[in-house]
Amino acid sequence: MAEVINMPRLSDTMEEGVVAKWLKKKGDKIEEGDILAEIETDKATMEFESFYDGVLLHIGIEEGETAPVDTLLAIIGEEGEDISELLKGGKKSEDKSGDTPKAKKEDNSEKKSEEKSEETDSDEEAGEGAIPEGVEVIKMPRLSDTMEEGTVAKWIKKEGDKVEEGDILAEIETDKATMEFESFYDGVLLKIGIQEGETAKVDSLLAIIGPEGTDVSKIVKASGASKEKPSKAKEEESADSDKNTSEKSKKETKTRDGGRIFVSPLARKMAEDKGFDLADIDGSGENGRIVKKDIESYKPSEKTASAPATTEKPTAEKPAVKSYVPAGEEEFEDIKNSQMRKTIAKRLGESKFTAPHYYLTIEVNMMTAMASRIQINELPDVKVSFNDMVIKASAMALRKHPRVNSQWTGESTKIAKHIHMGVAVAVEDGLVVPVLKYADQMSMTQIGANVKDLAGKARNKKLQPQEMEGSTFTVSNLGMFGITEFTSIINQPNSAILSVGAIVEKPVVMNGQIVVGNTMKVTLACDHRTVDGATGAAFLQTLKNYLENPVTMLA
Image (cartoon, rainbow, N blue to C red; front, side, top):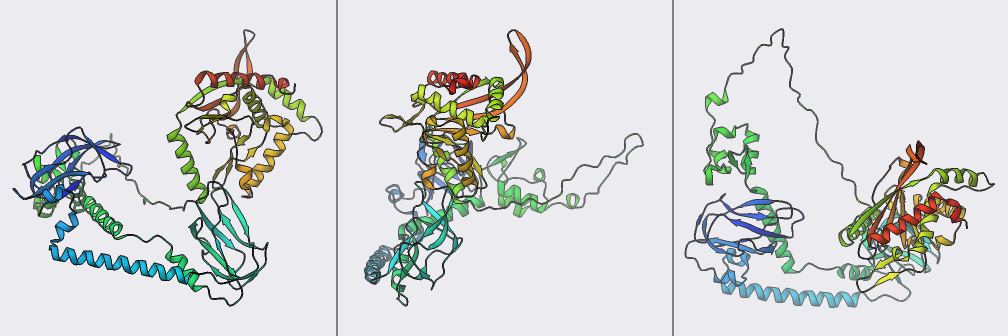
């Protein structure tokens, strides 16, 4: 029976592969373990072996061609076998099953019957799901602009409790914060749809509120029925995928040990488990390659099995040195990703892989800024940090270089007339970016007070969605951790982000003399689609002038 071989997924990120070289030709005899071709993945060029015996009847992807994973790569079967149906796209599962046309026809009838039954069930459930008078169905709310799913951190009310409008029902963890969710209705909490600690998509059934004693079982059933049911085709596809995965786990592509011994990974593992020396085993595969059956049939000689251990006695001049044998146990700890961590991964991945980043670094003399900060902080009820000075200087520099204060939309470049500064704040689960609205109009003292307030809310997970929306530029500061220089990923839809390092005491040249100075490095990451190199450089020059002469920011 002919076997269809599809383009394999040889790495976790592989989506398509290139046939670098065919080692077998159409019509060649194939044995299990033979190398069919060299396939170039997104990470390496790997040898792909056959899992079947037979003749190579068809090559679906020629050398040098690229094809997606699961595209027809080759067909192996008996010499002269008719494979026309397979080439037309016939299902492998049907060919292997040996079903007769009559059986297939009956199977189609069963499918139609099942589809009709599902439609009937759906109609019945739709009728059953009618909401009784006075009953309110509450779904998982979208509590932030990027929220796709939420986790119920805690239920404040329990089933059977009386609920009034304005009462807090539950605490819901979004991708940005844990927020209290209040009821908009009066009644009794009849049903809880998502238990504490469970995660569900937005618009999933969260709770049902209504008059005491109301039967809501039909609503719950209808809600469950609304979930997407896997189709028959998807189930078959999943089964095929599981089978392919099982086959791949049994046999991997050939590896080379020392450039001389050819052995499959499975055979190597079996040899290691049994304590066999691969050098003593003759391979029956192509080029003497050792495969599974060679390990199974190999019997070590008595000499090998009971070779006497000879140890050379150490001399007095050369004391014996025991070889280091590492001890311990490899283990991992699985930590469930929070909604915040999932969103950080998604958003930063989208930014890094879609926006062409480039980086500009400049070193700023901070001696005058340090002296000015001391004088400013001597005023009563005033406290200004270097971070506040950087935010103020950045906001004013954006006013002079509006192209940096922009967004890429594909069809156009949107240049913001307002300046909303995002300030990256590290929290326990990751990173949030609260926003200072109209930061260029604030004094450094006002910036400091607002940043302190927002950072406190962020660490306590009390930030509201509107306090994290609308940034046009972002500042990230790791100077307090002693980091002197770093680069950041742009917080989209912004076009740039400023990375601020620590102030470092070092020798500097002043008026032709080497003196002790204090400098700080800042790096601007730009989206090259909107901000050209010269534009970014000009922005940094203006920023440097403001920081080296803070009095100009007060003019």
